[in-house]
Image 1 (cartoon, one colour):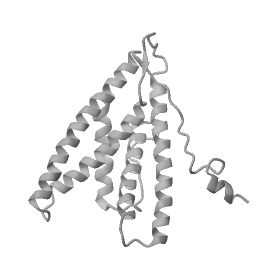
Image 2 (spheres, one colour):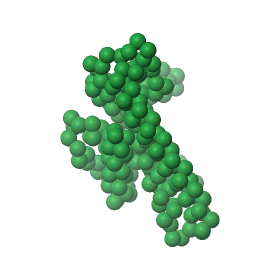
Image 3 (cartoon, rainbow, N blue to C red):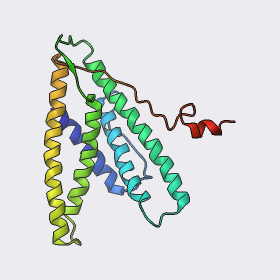
Image 4 (cartoon, rainbow, N blue to C red):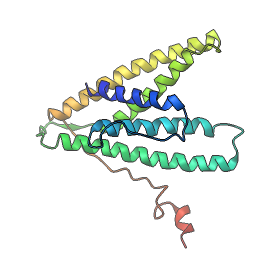
Length: 201
């Protein structure tokens, strides 16, 4: 199933990141550029780095200048994440372009890649919740709370994976069709963000 295939790549990305556990470490993609694995690995790496950006920026002692720089990095990361989702959807559009949709076909609330985006984030949640469960310096109460949360996350993974795989089957058999809207991010656009527009000389 595609969801298992993708989740395995997400786990590889997360495990590799945590060898150094450094947001500034060099990124190397182990998969060829013309493979979907390349996009999935890159997508999760972006998510993993941003996860840790979000941890760092919440430090109450962070220097304001450093925080602003980090906010810029988070903005850029969000744009990269959106771009990767669109590339992944492009893969599915190309894969299923010859499918004849049924007259009764319906559209899904989200594209395959946006559902896979949620699976990538879920992989990170599971990884870090497992870390909490395995802590030796935490109270039994904390560990139990985290174990309960981990059980919910694992159930969510099962449900989301099934939904992704069913969506792909439905698209492949013509029961659903893909319609992708390019994300219209406004805050980084000098023509659409009034603050940036006002700064143009």
